[in-house]
Image (tube, rainbow, N blue to C red; front, top):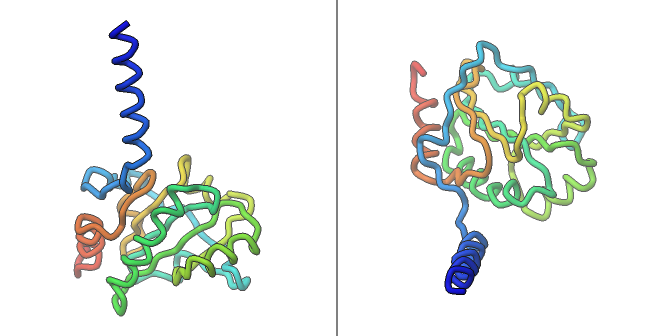
Length: 176
């Protein structure tokens, strides 16, 4: 009987602990070096219908994030991406949030409600996400000023941590 009670206690503590788990910290192991030789294409429309291509951002470090409004971890990490963008204001840095297949009014409502100042693109058929091999949302990529992907990050991350800031700062450094 004790073993069943102990198992139930451990299980309840584990579940209770999971509910209060803070956003995934940005330890350096979360930044997986990109090993593919190519950088996938990206050509998508924003909420106003303007086409954006990855080549438009050459010369900048880009945080490319695939997300959806129904994805709780995606929504949870958005404020930290906004903070990261603000931290590097005036520098050659941009955050591009690619929505995973939702209708524009839903995305627009979310962006306005959350007061996000990010470039938001729409991937209605998820073709771009497939090309980037996104299998988990959120899925993020850090792209160097030369237009090559440098790192991928699977899952939610707190982009406001010093580790994440340091990785971006390293990519902004001349010669990177």
